Length: 400
Ligand SMILES: *Cc1c(COP(=O)(O)O)cnc(C)c1O
Image (cartoon, rainbow, N blue to C red; front, side, top):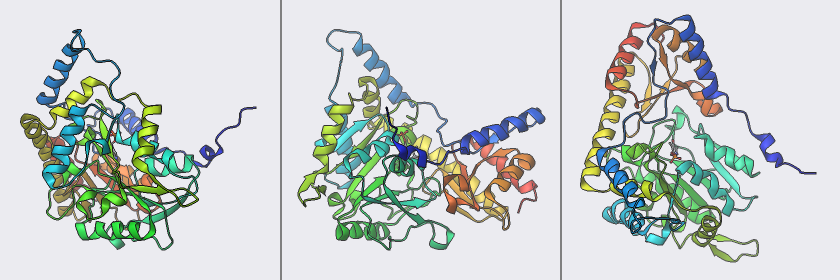
């Protein structure tokens, strides 16, 4: 008899994006002449920048020569990329991270999901609500007990420290879906909590490149002492449009310690290294060369332009919604705009009216967790023209 992992039966089915797709398909069928604007996508739309393309083409050519050919590479990532990461993402910001604390991967989604392997199953886990579903579902799959930290307008979408002791804490800033950020002092509270309780913070920094304001930490290691309590996840997906190329990395400082039940200290870096070598054979050479090129002067400039134009869309959407009378969050340090739906309407009712009356597709907040009810997510990954047109359409409706 082959028994299943029954934790999987505890998972809630997510119908969010399939329900949206069905509703949009039905609307399009009934209204073939209406032009729909999609502001629901959580994917970039701009093509890969020339600097990265060039690096990839060159790497492809390397593969076709005996001298340049690369087979299995280091599981943790090539030295050239780990060096570039340490130098550009950390050293230049005054943060001391070593190359062997970086593990290059094929995505932050996999990293956030796989990291649970090195933690005990009876750790208590704190997760915000609403949330990027990966943290939640992977912990349910591995049977952990979850403490939900509600984030709503009442607490400015900044989670409060858990009342009971937790062992693992997931934080994501700039946040998906709310688009909000924590200031240094606010993040420091979490680092202090983790130190006091010997907990670990799992810090998802996928939207770091969208930070525009001062005093917003670009890395959790900007906070003193964070290297003793935090793992950081970074991704080239939203930064450099690598959602289809696939490259990310996780940082596990060597001083980050976990404990056996007998109280013995063990390095998480060693555990993750062991796991990586056993279960992973590295990211393709071609992709790692592309990631390296994001740090070249041209690469940096080209990527910055793309981010700037997404942020411009975010501004257009935020201002447009405010002019239309909505209460709006995010959109300043983030491609996500999180709005309060009008009093007495659910997130899905708002979705339906926005689709029918303005022909705009967004994402109902309740799809990200129960406390997302009453909110709605729009994204800045469309075009400028569509962002402007969408706001004009919303202003013409009487959805308030
Ligand atoms: C998009 C996104 C990621 C990146 O995932 P990849 O697997 O690297 O593409 C990570 N975390 C959050 C919250 C995201 O929205």
